[in-house]
Image (cartoon, rainbow, N blue to C red; front, side, top):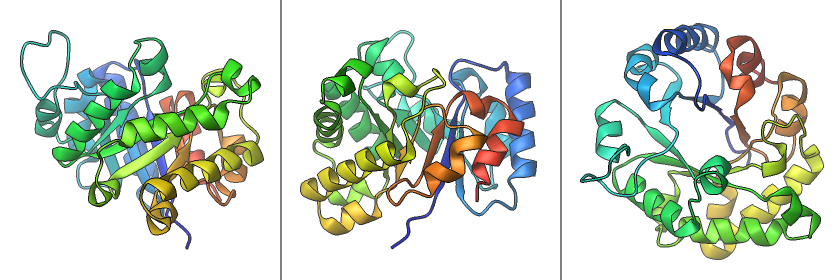
Length: 250
């Protein structure tokens, strides 16, 4: 079975509303005949601006995070109810920047995953090892722990709305990329972990994206790997001229 490709753009903490609107319009125009699944994830402040631009197109609207609680006294947080209200369809959770800069652990990420799924969102669950973990031979153990922790309590039925994004932390924004073969080996391992938690059929169906310095120059080779089903793109997602060639690879 060949899974469909899913190319997502994580805009991180970039773009004013006017800049976000300009990029979203360019993507809608240039990807309207695209044959893959696409996502744009602007900052919280630009979601309301981008929502009507991508509505009804082949580009999904994503948020880069959400609170672990549905509502309440949580200063500075954004709830799933507020995201739903804006038309957000997908939430990116467990990104390495959230894990390592903001100290989010598997338990907190899992709470967010289950809350987002309970409200009907698709979830992109990010996993990946640090350079020192890879060099210590612990890449698989780290990824297994993050998959198990992130999916704890997630039903087989809800798993159909989960995408996993493997991002070796040492390759994010550094210009370094895992070789396609190295990346595919981890993807294959993660698929095996999902198979053990759920079923071989679930493992076969789950979309596993690669993230970490994905560029127009390396996208096709990465996507050609058996277990790589798309990309979670950071820096190259900030310009249509670099995101579109990745989105239209092959």
